[in-house]
Amino acid sequence: MTVKNAFYAQSGGVTAVINASACGVIETARKHPEQIANVYAGRNGIIGALTEELIDTSQESASDIAALKHTPSGGFGSCRFKLKSLEENKREYERLIEVFKAHNIGYFFYNGGGDSADTCYKVSQLSEKMGFPVQAIHVPKTVDNDLPITDNCPGFGSVAKYIAVSTLEASFDVRSMAATSTKIFVIEVMGRHAGWIAAAGGLVEDQGIPVVILFPEVEFDKDKFLAKVDAKVKEYGYCSVVVSEGCHWPDGKFLAEQGTRDAFGHAQLGGAAPVVANMIKEALGHKFHWAVADYLQRAARHLASASDVEQAYALGEAAVNKALEGKNSIMPTVVRESSSPYKWSIGEAPLSEVANVEKMMPLDFITEDGFGITAKCKEYLYPLIQGEAYPPYLANGMPDYVTLKLAAVEKKLEGFEI
Image (cartoon, rainbow, N blue to C red; front, side, top):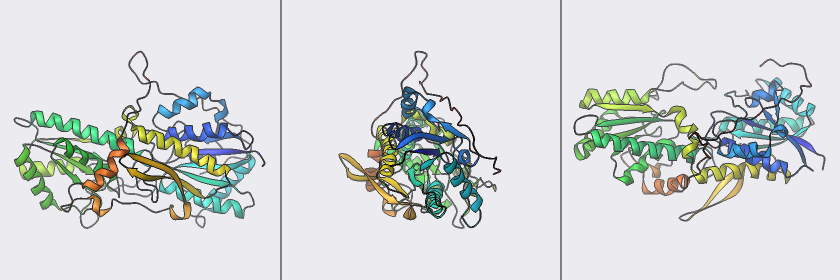
């Protein structure tokens, strides 16, 4: 077999464990020098391939690559940049192949969510047509947990753990002050179309905490919501509310919509928590505090789920092994074999069935009233937040995260305007 280089890139919003997948890819590739000469990483994701801003990972020490496993965020830089369809912008895909050709890249590992799965699929198709076959393997990642076929997505378990624990701790705070002060705590979490992260906040119910959840899958009914909160406060003296950023009115408009759009053309969200908190204040008169978890939830490596870290690494490792087996245009997946005890294995899915498909919360995971999670949902969630994988800490008390050298690969082509 001809020795070729590999290209790895991180895409979209980063997570607490995406670097563990990078570690899995690079460490596994280094074990097969007879097939993979080197792994080049894209500086700031796929943009790095288009502009030929490649990073030579061979210049990183084994210990620094290993340290990626416990370092949050994207070690090589990520981006929100969606390649248009082949018909709309063939030049970008042709540029990718041109760069791959120039640097003898025969393996493409793209670590991201649904949009990156789509890009990976298109590259695998076009490379064949252009006479330079590239084995394109998608490495799943998304805190939203909305990729199909795989049981769960790396990044989600750690966010779920962070939200469950943070909601619990803040609720204990509210409970202790409710007699004379705050009675309502509202936390806003990520999740544009799928309520997986919001569902994790519902786990506090098992600790005796009164909680109301607002899912994207359930149309927001103001009167029913306020009645639910009122009942909780009358029974417990306080109430916590977990609201997904994608919570929306019956007409489809988001509670948090700002009227702006992000790089992918999606409505820019942020602000559901104060909307909900003020709604409760105006109707019921309760004092409140609200918080937006935002970057904190997806960057919290100090509270990562051990199962999440393990799976993130395993899927990066599997991506390389499957490429070396000759596989192409696939995504390695997590297959749940048992919830108690928790057992899982690695499977695979064709990218044609993954690209542009979103996995929503099953209706039997949401209680009949639309404001809570069922026992079946809890059975699904608990294994994903199990175990602690604390990073090493320095003597000064700060976590020992790694910053890579990011040595550039010499360019061989003319510049390219994005």
